[in-house]
Image (cartoon, rainbow, N blue to C red; front, side, top):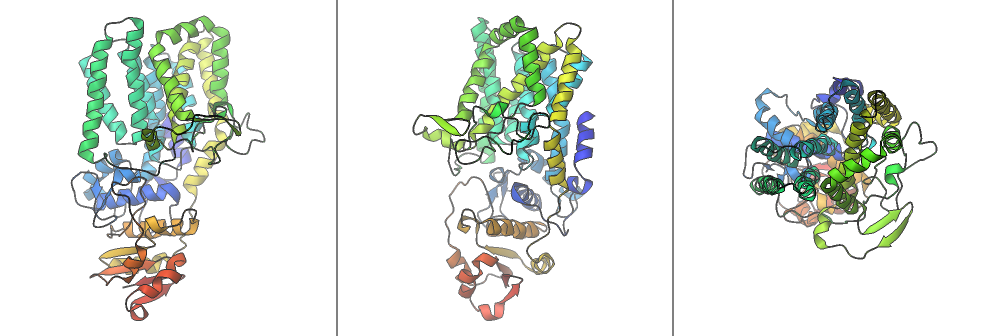
Length: 518
């Protein structure tokens, strides 16, 4: 209920339930996610099941590589007859994750044995005020931090008592997490991997059964990846560029209580510290201090009892920090070239999230047990945490309420697209120069307009490719027209490409600074 209240206060109704045909455009990653979901919902079913052939036609795009949240997209596609034209669930996802975040936090806390009301309310507030979660609003799928809290809850239950049913639920949860985002699945599997390790270090023979359960869960994820077409994709690389700075967890950027004059993320890589943003929050920092002061012996005992989890979290921290260790604005240790397989984890700073949530759950469990005052202290820590996150929550509300206008002539393009059977967009995505913000934004706008009716389009913005694309825009511009083709040339490409269009004098007309040909 608390999560639902926050969702209703932060997100406007037209953000949660968008309608096609409006006079405002989505921007950035949210535009990419909405485009991919719309196209997938509008297309017929293909094999593999996540393939949408109406994007990057005729080859198609696996929507997992466009961060379209396949778990939600599959459900929406099944419900397509009930949905309005041009619907996408990206706004709705933010609300669902705002509801799931505190529920998953209570699930994890109860895994420690703590079931009282005040600590539960405290961790609800703290989870909703977690800065690294709130600040992910530019990337819908990565707001699914509830999956990490869910994995911690599974770990806490499985190290206490294993059942076939619970391991089956764990496998189902891991596959579902994959369908939210592969990064989250990697983190959740790592947390689950701590179960046999902890039991082994305790000298508990149950580690063998736990190892079998972990292998079964991993095989379930691998099978899902094979069936759904995840394997074989490659990205841009860059492991270490978007790493965790060692000061980031204590760097209070966007903190109401401690932020003061801090104007940005701490970064030593030169690529910005966004992916490594990991401010714990004033509440969690205060809670950790209280635990050290009030229950130091119990904290050490708990750490020993969960040594396997501690080792896994240490490994995830090392992965997040990367081979180029940044402290403040300097690289203090460079270990040379990273192994090639790590290039899959370009945004390595994200891997600190399980550490953050383990600290959160552990702090509330230990603090709640600090005598009669413990539950009230836990509630107070939650209040401080959610108050401290006010600037980020305010920014999130402003972002969700923003209604940027179209820079392309949307009414004219909608009219042309209504008569077309396919769209060739120039420049195509691999031809957009790095740093060309205007091309990037206008390409999204054109794709958003085309996605309103699922008009097959020649290109698409994706994070990973099975076959890396090549830039062949000159050939595309000069090619003969296909039946029903609309060819749209964005403003910055007009000087180079408009003159190549066959019979351009009669087929093409200006739409503002863009050129449309048919």
